[in-house]
Image (cartoon, rainbow, N blue to C red; front, top):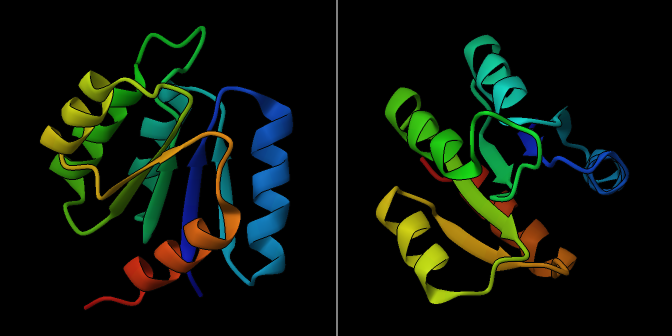
Length: 122
C-alpha cells in the first residue's frame, strides 16, 4: 500500500486530497503545518510527500520541510503542490531535492500517475 503524507495548511483542501487518494487505495496522513509534517516524518517514512510551500502560521516553511525530508529520508519522493508559479520557487525546490513541482489547481490525474510511479520505483 502506498503511504502518502499530505502537508497542506488549509484543512478543506487537505481533506479533499486525503479522500481522493484514499479512494485510490493509498494510506494517507495529513499534516496542517510544517511542525506537524516533521513530527509525522519522525513516526513514519512515506513513499511520497505532497507538500504545499506556503504554510500559513507555521514556524517551519515548506522549503524547510522539503530539506529535512530529503536529509532524513532521501528515498521519499517529494512533490510540491503550490500556488507559487514563480521560477525562483521552482528552482529552489529543485535545488533542495523536490522530485516534481505541481502548480495549483492540481492536475489530479497527472499527480496520481506520478505518485504511483514514484512509490513503485526501486
